[in-house]
Image (cartoon, rainbow, N blue to C red; front, top):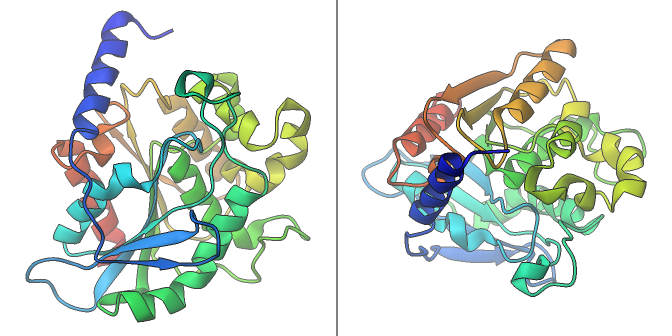
Amino acid sequence: MPDDAAVARDAAEAEAAFSHPAVEPDTTAAYGDHPDQVVDFYAPKGDVGLPAPLVVLLHGGAWRAPYDRRHVTPFADFLARRGFAVANVEYRRGSPIPAQGGTGPVAGRWPETFDDVAAAFDALPSLVREALPSADPRRTVVTGHSAGGHLALWAAARHVLPAGAPWRTDRPAPLRGVVALAPIADLRTAEELAVCGGASAQLLGGDGRFEERLPYADPAALLPTGIATTVVQGRTDIVVPQAVAEAYADAAAKAGEVVGLTLLEDVGHFPLIDPAADACAVVAEEIAQLAF
């Protein structure tokens, strides 16, 4: 269990990250009929060469409904001001936990959460052409934070899903790479550590379906991908501990793939998406190394 000082530090980091006002996108496009099936687009700002690399962003929040894409709009704007074109993807999530007025701690929806991420990525090439002509889809990097980091890794691994999986593609996505930020990257390890109150099992439909669905949803089981991947992780993260990232990197190594693991000293969970934090600049540099 984290000590009181670690809990207080995490709370302060979360407050700082969420203190920034939301930044409205330049345009929004739908990839389906549900209200959550939308993508917000941010054009690159400043004196940058065009077309600009495209960053596809997937937000976190334990796959739960109260946490939507709005909380990462300052981060999306931060990346746009660094010269990236940004696509901030929304997707269907689960119910609020009881403390938030919900009836149960349901994280994500099976299969809708995965349906949406797959549909969004399939639709992005045409959406980007129309909504964000300043973007260069040939230089696409996917990033995501926490639960969004899980989805970023999963989206890049669809070509290695089990045969018959509805989201499987016949070839790797044309990506420059993935930069996963404190991702829930190994669902079994996350469950062993009770990450986000058992959210990983809830995402897969509960304990009774966990083992059955794990091969279709766990990035640590979908390796090697052949796509350049870096995990950025704070060493003092008590929300998604370092052990989860290390388990994913170990699984990749066993599968014959090298995954970059950037560990940041004295950094917790939320500075990675806080534009005012030094860790956020490190994230931008990791993305730039793949994109430019």
